[in-house]
Length: 263
Image 1 (tube, rainbow, N blue to C red):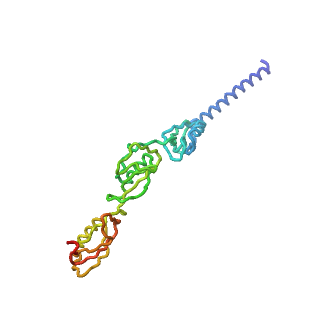
Image 2 (image 1 turned 120 degrees about the vertical axis):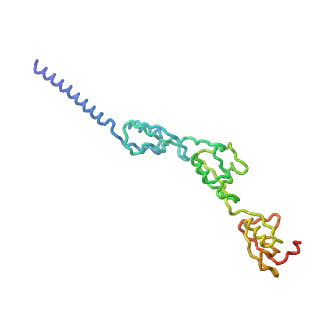
Image 3 (image 1 turned 120 degrees about the horizontal axis):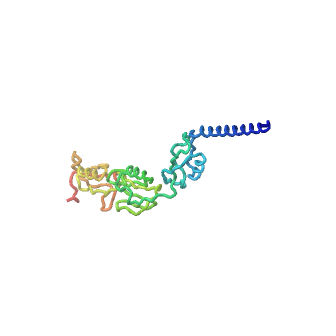
């Protein structure tokens, strides 16, 4: 074997050895990196399409767990992710996401919980689970307990109340219902007719009507026990249609004897 041929064989063997060494180093690098933990990016508030492109590059898999409707948020936006951004995870990790829904769910009023006559806060909590917002439109006097629902309004129209509810009305998820609630103050009652009554009876009538006795003026000789005196005049005066706000006062003029007009 000539020296030239020997050198050629030697170089060929060196080349083979070099290729094997490079292959081993590459394999070791791949093996070492395989299974190492990567930091999970923050995918919230970006579109699911954009997030999927980035996730494929980084060997993550995005899986839509749920879709929720959010007022003012376009459809397909990532709202939540699990694991959270910044978590250390392995390659090919599944990342579960919630995205915004493109269209609002329509809720038929007849399928919602009963609202008329119920306590407002209880109904508000039930509606919040359906992602329906609630607000107080106004208050109105009612003899029952305060803060109970008297009327339900949606987009400017009354849809529930003492005249029944419109079961076929559809309410969009994320929309708002408005409520008229009860209160004990501010109601009106008829002005009672106290003339010719003894003052003690008048006190009872005023109490049952949620009114107050004002000034007591005397005419002539009156008994020491004013409750046995007779009412001659009252202010405001009584008429068939007169009304007065609850809590207001009525002033009276009393005397000891039953007025002649009361015979």
